[in-house]
Image 1 (tube, rainbow, N blue to C red):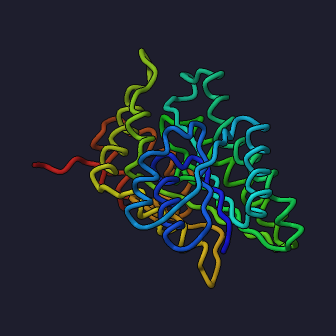
Image 2: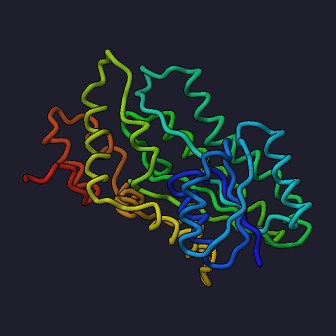
Length: 291
């Protein structure tokens, strides 16, 4: 039975993945900062006859990470699979960024992954096998308008994952990057505001419309969990797995258009012009359907 450590398991993709993998026979350690928030996880798991083990872990605290991994190793054995899911979002254009708040996003989204990865890699190298799954975002492949810090943190995750994939390969350690588009999770309602007053109202409005349109697609966290499970079982492993609403379209679309086309998109004067250009670039219609 493979041992799986999943960060940020109290809600969203982390919770859905913990339930699914526990139901599939993995020994799941569902990590979260506050274990009192595990109620929905445990209820959902019980409903499918699964029993994930809840463990306290704060990815922003090196001692907390080391303590959690040590407890797993001493009670069950080395972590075979690490799923770095914990993350936070932030809406801000470059001029509007509160730098200290921005640093906190990187602390969780990037350095948190580094801390957890460093904690499990030594045992993975020793046993000559391991799998690290990093939950990125389409914002890690496309510079998400009005979300420079969040997007930059996910670009950093993509770069780190590419490094790690090469570094781990000689030791049998595999890396997978999951790149969800808009998914119905708790991170969305927590992140609907933006700095005001601002000269970048157009950018924020278009960014929020993108998410509103994605929310209408109603992609559940369970769909991303199934992609993660598929990546663990994939007989022909890939590095990247785009998924959810807009995942494939944005990841492939940005690679297909020129930098000049990207800049033209930003220069659109009206929302309608922007939506038309966005659809031409990515095949996604951001307009709200008429009732």
